[in-house]
Amino acid sequence: MINAVTIAGTGSYVPEKVMTNEDLSEIVDTNDEWIVTRTGIKERRIAAEDEFTSHMGTKAATRALEQAGLEGAEVDLIIVATITPDTLTPATACYVQEALGAKNAVAFDISAACSGFLYAMKIAKNLIATGSFQNALIIGAEKLSSFVNWNDRTTCVLFGDGAGAAVLRKAQDGEGVILATDIGTDGGQTDLLNIPGGGAACPITVNNAGERLATLAMQGKEVFKHAVRRMKNSANVVIERAGLKAEDIALVIPHQANLRIIDAIADRLTVPNDRVFVNLHKYGNTSAAAIAIALDEANREGRIQRGDQFVMVAFGAGLTWAAAAIEW
Ligand code: ACO
Image 1: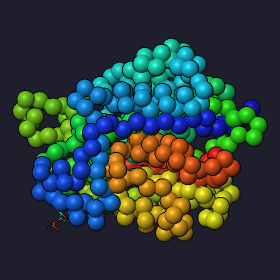
Image 2: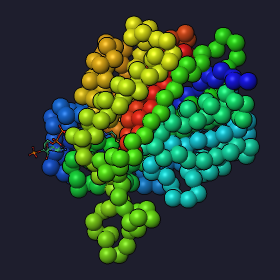
Image 3: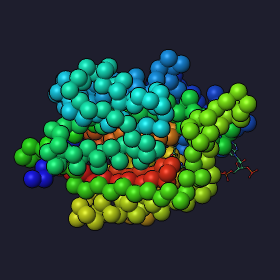
Image 4: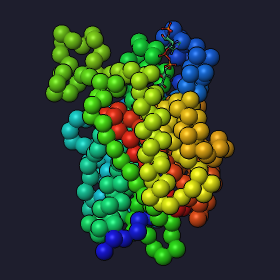
């Protein structure tokens, strides 16, 4: 039997410390005008030195569980989407499990960059739909500030830290449901956006430590083109599968990487700007956390109301892309 799956609660957390464009201009040769015009970002949050991805993920998850009315011990499955895990092993989800007292949960990470939260949503939805698990906690959490080259103005201005979470469970009669999901990958473009060092292919050694290879490297212009095309296509897949028309869509929650990309997607989906959720001016690009934080803010700010149909769509390193159509 295939069960319908609902989003029973959302939560998010961003670190206290705000880093403005002005602050960045004291570190690298940049300015507020360039950053705002090219990206739409005004400030981002930076985690404390002793505040890790799992800590932020746990805070976001606690809020999502509260909203869903679920205790840690009742959670069946925890998936953390991240490219900035606390440690290469064990998975960040294991630390989150312990912090939440989610003793009965299976916990693992997935790595799909900015598309990670929607990848996690599809995996969790299908595992609940087929009856393998009763519920799931999905988390997008990143401490990108630890993997940014603070000497490279072309990338360091773009990223920030934070976490978002959602609780998925079998839908009861009359509850909103996840209508459709789509995920995709193009492994032919791994060179466009990556963290080249720190893995088995290029361990960090005394000899290469100065090259900052364990930081994000990106060919921005190329990524931009792929992002627009892939997100438009993926959004259209879920819109069609869900049987929606542009005018039915109450809100589009796109990945928060660049306002120009968001505008291009809205344009191609023929959804007016007032029905597109934007918070990247506050947080920059928080990769897997971005859609998760945006979903929680849209929920708590009342931008999505019971019965509304909305679309989330993401794009990231891999290359990866993903979309979901939801009835709230
Ligand atoms: N401040 C001032 N000048 C800058 C800065 C900066 N921070 N960064 C670059 N410049 C300069 C460049 O040196 C260049 O100068 P030049 O013309 O003298 O050579 C000029 O500005 C233009 O640079 P471009 O790279 O051509 O700028 P572009 O308009 O392409 O914008 C950006 C760059 C914002 C990165 C854009 O390409 C972009 O958003 N790309 C997509 C990123 C994305 O979506 N990533 C998503 C996934 S992220 C993930 O998965 C983790």
